[in-house]
Image (cartoon, rainbow, N blue to C red; front, side, top):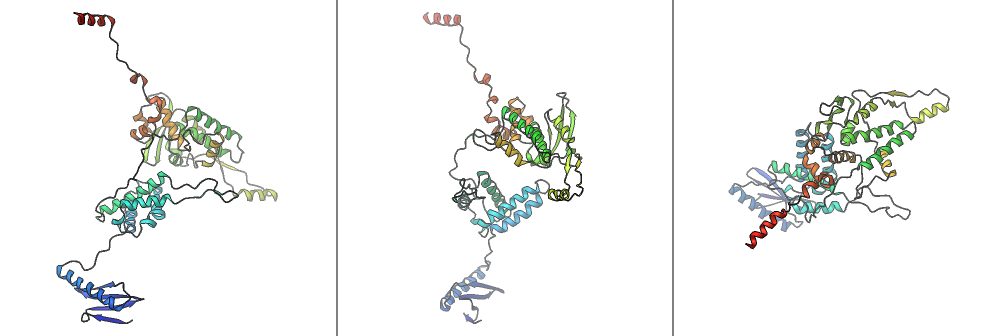
Length: 433
């Protein structure tokens, strides 16, 4: 490799590919820099200016090498290491995993190699525009090759979660003095939001739903009857307890106790709930007691190999093992599965999938139904919030605001009493005098 020296041998020039690089030793530090030139004469001019600048920094006591600014990827790595350790036991592994998934799939590809100071409010807005042009799973196509329904960009809640993860990474950079200030994360041109509600079943719709699940359980084939019966009881159980779907799925038999409530004199369930907010107690409606006893008395069929193999054994005349059933044990889950497909099929068949506003109802809507029905029955909102492991503010914002029964007409429709006739005449006589 050919090398050229300038300035009395203090600076060496060498070539990599077509570009010339400069190398010099200042204050016992060997420093290299690309001149960005493919012409040797131009490279010498750049190298001279660069070397004289290094000498000036040396005399002024300034650092010779510029420190590399940490990139977004560096801060994201630091955030992942810190968050998983610090929140151990406080955040579920699935929640931690969701942050890592958002970083891997969306945030790192867009911000990855940018310096952390370059993640400005404008770049965050560019990220929103970038995501708005992307589509997830594309809908099916018809015979003409056209989409059956238009592709949907990421939902508002999806973008909200991604910006939340981005905010945590930027906060990590600020804690380690890698960022001087937080950029503005809120979207510009934000419209005023309407008063919306979470989809729920009113009293008549809830009756229609559990009657439909009960009918489906009675008419289900023997092979699938256990699944339909579990779904029917889960609909009633969640409607009487207000559990979240993930809380119901984690619920074990030993977490539920039948007790005699001292205040009402009725049997209820005391439930030790473990889910989104960690541990929290819950007291059910009296109607959940019979459901729990029914769940304990229902034996679950144990899988005896693949159905195809059993059919082959029957065709060959070989003895097929008799089905084995097991009753729930203390450490068994009360609802091992949410039976989402069965639930959605019944909702569609009963025309209950969408509410009046076009919002889709899901299994989570049973929790919303419990809260709304309790509010309609004049339950104490503070006690209801404690029992549902949420806040009064959340209930007032998402539930109480759209229930007409929460407005006391007697307190509103008050009128000022009219003066009596005798008093009116006395006032008129005094005016005449």
